[in-house]
Amino acid sequence: MRYEFYYWPSIQGRGEFVRLALEEAGADYVDVARRPGKRGVPAMMPFLEGKRGLRPPYAPPFLKAGKLVIAQTAMILHYLGPRLGLSPRDEAGGLWLHQLQLTIADMVTHIHDTHHPVSGWLYYEQQRPAAILRTKDFWRYRVPKYLGYFERIVAKGGGPYVLGRRLSYVDLSLFQIVEGLRYAFPKRMKRFERKIPYLIELHDRVAKRPNTKAYLASKRRIPFSQWGIYRYFKELDR
Amino acid sequence: MRYEFYYWPSIQGRGEFVRLALEEAGADYVDVARRPGKRGVPAMMPFLEGKRGLRPPYAPPFLKAGKLVIAQTAMILHYLGPRLGLSPRDEAGGLWLHQLQLTIADMVTHIHDTHHPVSGWLYYEQQRPAAILRTKDFWRYRVPKYLGYFERIVAKGGGPYVLGRRLSYVDLSLFQIVEGLRYAFPKRMKRFERKIPYLIELHDRVAKRPNTKAYLASKRRIPFSQWGIYRYFKELDR
Image (tube, rainbow over the protein chains, first blue to last red):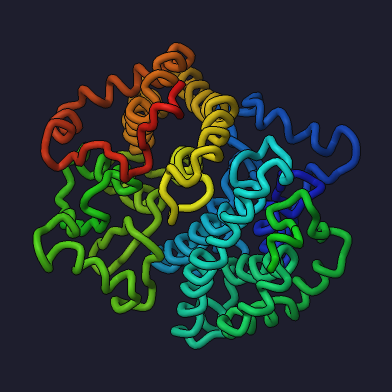
């Protein structure tokens, strides 16, 4: 089946977790909103306006698989996982990965809110004091707790991946978390990485996988920017 | 099967969405951390410390169902739904409800962050200006978008519930959202409710269901308080 994937064409954002899975698996898919002209972003809008079916997505990303329209990043991966060979087929294994992905989603919200704690409708400069304080707490409490949790899980299983020797979509997402934190907080991340050797090893392994490596080097991989989840501000990276 | 449910015993919090489902379904369950003494909160800690099995939850709430330990509120409901008769058994229907519940989870984070936008480790009084601004945007943009989305879905299906005539766990969660917003923002909510007649009708129907009505009147229902997701501050409710 050819999957239709819908997400904003100019950022990695939450959609990138799905793109990484589709690319690693070599799935047959179209990144709809990146098509030129009317076949691009305008093709996404009827879904969001509730004009396509009785079960409209609340926001991108969403995936069209046959007649099914599926939204929410973690749920898209939960659906795709067994179909792309990136998740075990037993219920307990599938739920475990989904739970980890939902925890990653919670962390992503915290990452975004470091630079926009007050309002997504104001510029960073208009919420700078709050951003500085939130970032301080993020690195003091959230990062050690979230990444410490994932580190322990990989360590317990013996690595290199979350499920041991078998790659899953959660590994691809953890790769993306490390990449993003390196972009937004290069200094802080450099200091922190010594505490998460298993996650760094996992990251490096993912980066070397042929399909993912080819994707990362291609134009399909949108660069990090100041419009995504991860943004670099010198004063937040002390 | 007797389910073991684990969540902080003194607040409704995210756990309440699960409690409502268990209660409405008349499920056989133990609210473990509410038991007295060592059988209460201390019984929850080994799970969070990773001492019980290789798949530890990141945070409460979590559910023990036989050997399975399941965390993340929306995922617990996704698991329980078909087992409690609160979700259809077909894949598309189950995914649709799960997607809605994940969208509710996103809204819950926004609700919490109205009073704690900067840091969960500071008092409200230490982040008041940011809270006032975040609350303003919350009511200007987020509430109309989230509740407008759910209102349209119920309206399209003809009501009274999200799936039409059949109750689901999403209805119980939407009831809880309305209840919570009424507690935290009585003035604002009073003005807003005229825009969401279907959701108010859904809320009222849920409140009258015998099992839920009995639960809400019981001591098992923990009252709203200034320690939960929803908190009342006069200056945020203009």
